[in-house]
Image (tube, rainbow over all chains, first blue to last red):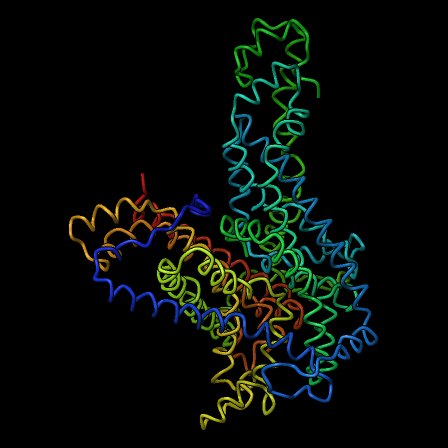
Length: 293
Length: 327
């Protein structure tokens, strides 16, 4: 399967080939490497820094180009807080992403368990169903999905954002790999203990897959939080429903009040940054194994 | 769902381990009903996922296919008119479509720079940095990938803002007047490329680094004892062993880069000016939700689906032929 090559997460990387070279040349190479890496790292982080810096200037300094915002002011954040219901937007986005994550994990746990534990008629066809869904871009199915969500009366609601995304084919395929690596003997032992497959799943398999589930869950949460196209269709008439839509309409109405726009953008990013800072290892691990979106 | 109960009847069966063999001849009626349950078990576990996939992916795909033969404006009460292959003929002849397809190819090729070429260079250089420094570089380069798309667009609109933005001012110092890049047909597409490339780079670096970490250092060591230089080791050992990773990233880029560019296009340029920065997905959106031409959007969608499936198939063939696996 070309979609998910096995990528061992963190073996020690040994710099190959440097030892046969004269020391001076190796030094020069190392210095050059650091230089290039530092430039790329700064180019990557600078726009994010600039977002924070602009948000933290006083409104009258908004156009200032000083590298450091001084004096620091939270006035822009106060302005955003008063102008749009950003607290509520953040809360409902958080709720949406949480529900979606839990549901996707649950659906994926059940499906991948079936794939990894039994062989059954139609297994190949069914697993092609999951792999094949990668080839169906969301834009190709968006009109029928939009009509169905409208029929269900979910247009303009967060429910309309959640329901079509309850199954993540990617999550199923990833968990299936993890479960296939699960020691068969443990399952056989639990069967001899008289456990049925359902209780074996929740008492033996799931507790042992906790790190993988955590990494996957974090990734699904980030993806849900950053979802753009589908929410922008379903929530067209209600810009206050999720933070992405709220900031887009704020960008339209307050276009050139850059301090306020950057403050709103900062608030939309903070939850994900917090996750990244505290759970970096899981996040990186999950994305390395993924390749999703 | 009590399949393997503690009953004595089941014990020998469980010992044989094969719950998938039918073996109905010897079974008593009661037991065969149990075996029937047993055979259903995997399907029951799969039910929610498969149902959701069918309802929200495959049935809609079939409906899109169906819609592509009708002329319809998305209003439930207005009639659909069967038009045969007209939508396909129209969509293939539309200049907007041709431009969007061309732009998409440009976007994909440019994205390769940020998802494969630069990540390879950076990850190879990063081998020389060690421990914490390396982690720090990679962590910083990955941050843009996590920035919410709307915030990404907002930040870059501010950085590129005419007059007051940082980049036009910097360009002015260098004697260049870049004006509003998102409204200039010559620069709009490239500005979007920069925004999306900035966001994708960290992901590519992460995947390539993981690929490099998976290569056993023994090969390089052995080669260097045999007198191979570092360039030669790179060309004959590292890159061939990385080829599955590279093919994987290539496939991701082809399948997903139009997807990645969508929010930036939608927020920063709306595909303009005059379609200069449009890509196929944003065009599908415009057909469907701005012109309310469901048939046209569906026909274009079907065509893209077929082309992307063909490309994906080619890539899997390619990865089967070209990949050198490390075993």
